[in-house]
Length: 407
Image 1 (spheres, rainbow, N blue to C red):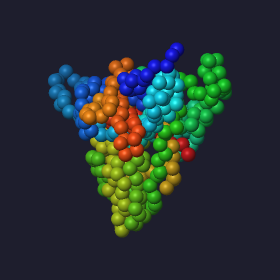
Image 2 (cartoon, one colour):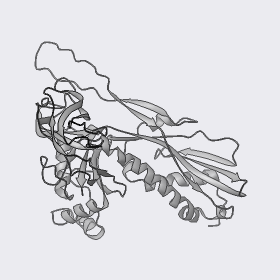
Image 3 (tube, rainbow, N blue to C red):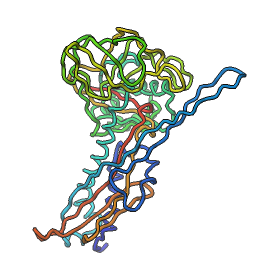
Image 4 (cartoon, rainbow, N blue to C red):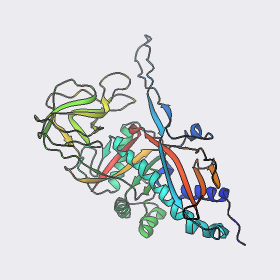
């Protein structure tokens, strides 16, 4: 095949194809709202309110009981612009597309894909549910094995997370641990073969895919210290008054730290019965303890003991013990298990600049990848410069996901 002069259109479509192929975690994110942003000339800062399903309780009575509609929503903000700058000559534009893609586009677009994936995986800090290796009650971080995925399945089931379209994304070391573990189990020969020859984890434990992603984030636990306790009974809402911490410690608890409260159990959101498993709470802001060891922790989920959006079996008792998962100032990889609607990505079409040498954008309807290509001439250095840009945003429904701490 003879060489062809590559046009901005050809380059942009190839970049979109490569970007989709390079994405890992992002392939399993929900993309149903991209069309809301697929308008000519999107700008940074666009937002979309996503209404969540209402929750109701069945009433065991012949007497009519009205159910209030509670409008709950999350916001998807398209606020992140990322780009890679490329420089190539007119001579390079006469390459075959395969050569040009391999030498120019793929190395550049791979960085864009990694950035999008990293930003999505960073949403872990909003997820409050956690499981580890041995049981649903033991939250001591440990190596990931097949049992960890089974525990993840059980926790998602207790939370009434839809059983279809579940995925797990794990760090490289965890992938090896799970693959090694399943080789000793009774599995279809194809699955065992993949684990044995390639170290790959097949679809197991009810997950459509268990994939490795090098961008899995490491969370470092706060400084901790003292013997933290609930300070005051019958607390509800999105903050928790506590005491018993070490005095005047900066970041004694950090955003993303997960903890349990003695005697406070999660409830199944369908039948509102206690699951028998302690509710996990995540701190949503860094906190410094006072001179008396007091900390008011911002938390998710809110402590709600009645109504359609009940989250826990009861409010905490005064002096109930607080247990933070992990060791102080220690980093743990945050692998994720989730339903595909847990993490939501929106990509937008860019407003193209005027007065440039070349400018083109695509929004691929098959993959929902939106990317733009702009080329201009650098008169100071007498050369063409080009860039590929993406505009996107992430949001999360934490009730549809969980974290797996590993050292």
